[in-house]
Image (cartoon, rainbow, N blue to C red):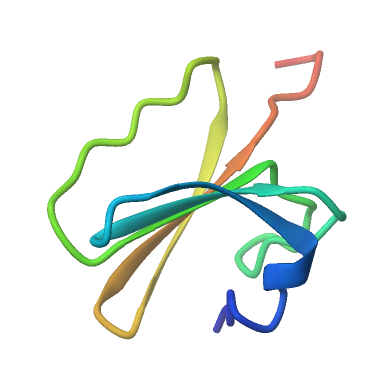
Length: 78
């Protein structure tokens, strides 16, 4: 599905709580769900809260007992 370690050099780590990580996409990595470039990637293996500070679209995937969220800026038409 999505191997964050394979693209880690193209992402910037924003937070790591031990149970979850948030990365910023700095190099146009494609979302594994829709194929479009994502803005942020959030992964958690526990019950956590994720609250973006702006309006965003989401793609969601599940892999290896983790929930993966990929945020996308809405288009100007949305």
